[in-house]
Every structure is written in structure tokens, then in C-alpha cells.
Length: 147
Image 1 (cartoon, rainbow, N blue to C red):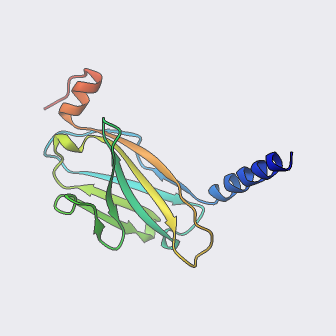
Image 2: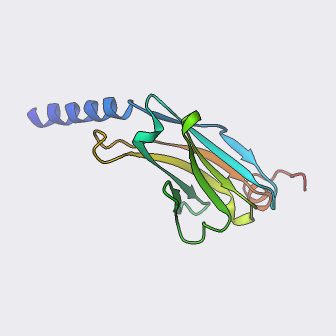
Image 3: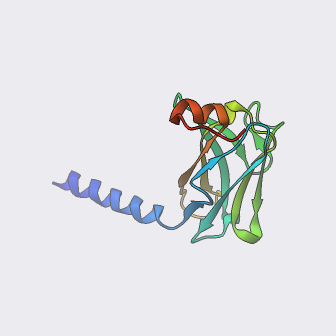
């Protein structure tokens, strides 16, 4: 019984801690033509974005999660040429731009946050933004796109 109470207490503590801040994506689903640029925005509610490290990840059809960008100009391999990440402090947002979308860019984009060291307990949260490119969208959903 003691063990179950401790587990419930830990779960409730985590749930309470996780609700301190929330990341909210600007759009849930975006359809983008190959060659266009696209910008993702992820707003933080409940705390200042300056207290966190913000990162972007992409999950592809094969469920592979790939690191894209973290503030301080840190990029995952192969992302620095066409991807631009930044923090918009005035709007409390993380921003990710893809300069020229390719078919390989289709997938779910996640923004995530981690508390800066020394700024309190470590917290993280994420939301997804689905982005479909022409080929990826047709294969998955059999819709015709404007090209």
C-alpha cells in the first residue's frame, strides 16, 4: 500500500509540475509545395521563453525522431543549410523556418522545452505540427495537391 501511495504521489507531482508551462503550435496541419518556404511557430504559455532551451524535432513516416535545432545556433546533421531556428522573445515563441521544402521534409514537427539549469526544476513539454509535402501527402492520404 505504501508503494502504491508513493507512486500516486509521484504521478500527481509530475502532472502538477508539467502543467506549469505549455507549448502551443501555431497551426496543427500545413500543406506545403516542394520548393516553397514554411515557418513554424510554437508559443509558450505560463512562463517566459527565456527560462527554457527550445528545440525542434521531426518525426517521419517510419517513426524516426530526428533532432533539427536548439537555440544558440545548434543544428542536427544536415539541417543547417535550409533550416533556420530562432527565439522570438517579444512574442514568447520558438520559430523554425524551412527555406526550400523538399519531399524529405514531410512529417510531424515537435517543439520541446527544457528548463535552463539553475532556473528551477527540469520540465519539458511538446506539441506537434503536421507538415505534408506534395509527394508525402499524396502517398499517405491520396489527395491531389495544387502543383
